[in-house]
Amino acid sequence: MTPFGQLALAFAMLAPSWCVIQISLAVAYDGLLSLVGLVLSGLIMPAFTILGVVVLGVPIRLIPWVDRRWAGNGWVYASIAAIALGLMAAGFLTRVRQIGSGNGIDYDILTPDPSLLCSGWFLLAFVLVNASIPLRWTR
Image (cartoon, rainbow, N blue to C red; front, side, top):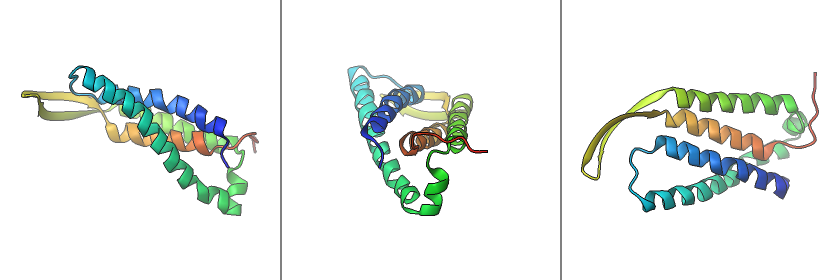
């Protein structure tokens, strides 16, 4: 259903963006272990997300009425991508207070809103994986 090249392109776009989200949400940096965890998270999380949105996109392909309206509809893709990017921008601009203790050090900091960031990222992944090419621009 989804070409392998499209999945590879989606992974190439989602992996670095996931790393940026993880860096923005990081409260503490504890050396090489954090860096290795960031890289592994940047490889594993986008792969599982792509698998999940492929499964969520199956009903789009199997229901003929939905498939006719979804397939190649560039306006729908652009609208959903704009909503996703808006959610991510709102997540970076909205700050959430995190209070806790790590390595015996208390912290009270403001970080970007993880729920807005992750929901926008997931919605963007859905569009990247389930969009079908060629586009048809309808009126």
